[in-house]
Image (cartoon, rainbow, N blue to C red; front, side, top):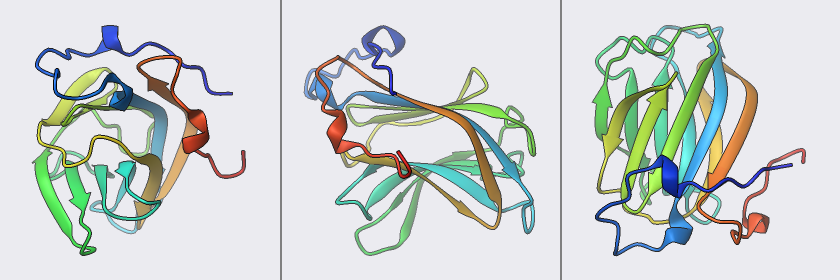
Length: 165
């Protein structure tokens, strides 16, 4: 069962007057990447997924997050191409270990935090809403737990499904 928790107190939403509060959400998950084909392979949190497919936004986490593009905020475009908006390296993602990953999506903003540390943000996300998901390339993702937090208790959870219940 998903627990709905107010998000307003968790995020700085000043300057968000143009967006509706209903589009503010956070995904929290305990993620571990294992068995990579090589250290450049990745797992990601997909967010603001449109029409159950692409386009969508992605918070990409490389197995070796210390490389230049170890963490990325990118978009899979309507043309099925990748557009990287922001990237960084970080030592906060433990390769092969459990990591608490937070993806905040509010207004046109995206913020990725790993193990309690904000590591990357982007402030011109092209979508205000959409679905959530996970994907991998060349590695295995182990997810211990997932929590999705919306801004209010009136969010229609029927829009969000998790395969296998």
